[in-house]
Image (cartoon, rainbow, N blue to C red; front, side, top):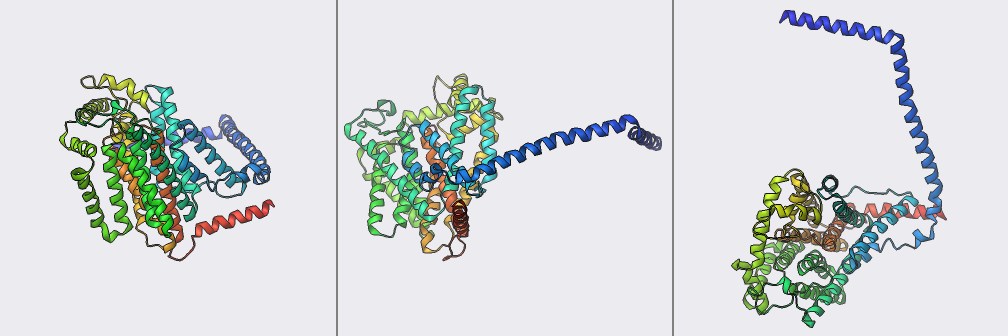
Length: 496
C-alpha cells in the first residue's frame, strides 16, 4: 500500500511538471491564443447576427401593430368559432385553421409587445409527452405515414395551447361553451336525420345479438363510436351551461341543445359512449354541489337502471348484450387485445411507431386467429404499442396533472360571477375522465376530430383554472385580465 501511494504521488508530480512546461512553451501559448480566437469568433458572429435580426424585427413591429389584417382578425372570437366548426369541417381544414389561429395570436401579441406565451397547466408532462410522440414518429417502422400522424398530434397539442392562451375572460369561456353546444346539436341533427331516413349500417351491428337494430348514426364522423366520443367530450360543457345560465330563456335554450345532443348520442348505440356520458354527468353533478355527491351518483345509477328496465327495446337489448358477453364485438376486442399484448412485449420500450400505418404493418405478425384490426380498441394499449412504455407513462402523468388542475379549480370558492367558469372547469374534468374511461374499450382518438374535442376541452379547462387562480378572492377582478387590458391599451395608444 505504501509503495502504491508513493508511485501515485510520483506520477502526479511528473504530470504537474509536464503541464507547467507545456504552459510555458511556445506551443502552449499558441494553442491558448487559437482557443481564445476560436471561441470569440463564433460568439461575436452569432451576437452580431442576433442583433441585426432583433433590429429588423423591431422595425417591423409598428407595421405589424398597424396591420389591417391583424386588427381585423377576430382573435377574441376564434376559440368560439373553432369550437363550433371543428366537427363539421374536414380534418385537413381543421389543422390549417388551428395553425393559422395560433400564428395570428402570436403575431398580434408580438406586435403589441405582450408576452408571447404563458406557462400552461401541466407544462412538464405535456412537453415530455410531446417529445415522446415526436420520437415515436421519427423511429417508426413506417416513417412517412408516422410523420403525417405527428402533424395531427402536434395540431392537437397546439389546439390545447391556443385555447389556454386565447380564452382570457369568463365571457369568452361562456362563448366557447355556447359554440360547443351549437356545433354538437347541429352534428346531432345530422345524425338524427340519418336515423329518420333509416340508413342501414350493417357493418357496425351484430344482428344476432341486436335483433331489430338496423341503424347506428354516425353523422359527419367515420363511425358511430367516433361520434359518441365527440359527444362525450361536449355533453358536460353543455350541461354546465344549463346549470350556470341565470336567465331562464337562455337556460331553456341550453337545455334544448342538451336534449338534442343527448338524442344523437342515444342513437349512436355506443354502449361505451352511454356509460361515459353517465359517468360525466355524475362527476359534474358532484362538483356542481359537492354536498350532493352521493345523490348525483345515485341519480345516474337510477337513470341507467331505468334504461335497462323500461327503456326502448333496442336500447335494452344493446345494454343486455354488454352484460351477457355474447356480443361478437366484445369477443372481437378480447382477441385484438391478446394480439396487441404480444406485440407490445416485442416493442415494449420503443413502440412500433406513431399512427395507424405503423400499427397495421406490425400487428398482423401477432394477431390471434386472423382477427384483423386497424387499432387496438383501447387508448392505453394503443399508446403502449405506438410509443412504448415511456410514452404511456408520460401520458398518464399528463392526464393526472390535468385532472388535478381541473379538480382544484372546480373546488375553488368563487364569487357568483365566476360560477360559470368554475363549472366549466368541472365540465373539463368530467369530459376528460369520461373519455379516458371510454378509451378502455375503444380508441377514442382514432378519429382526429374526436381527439380534437378532448384537447379543446382540456385547453378550455386549463384556461378556466388560470382565470380562477388569477381572480383571487371573491369580488376581485382578475389581476391577469387587468394586466392584459392595460398592456393592450398601452399598445393601442402607442400605435396611434
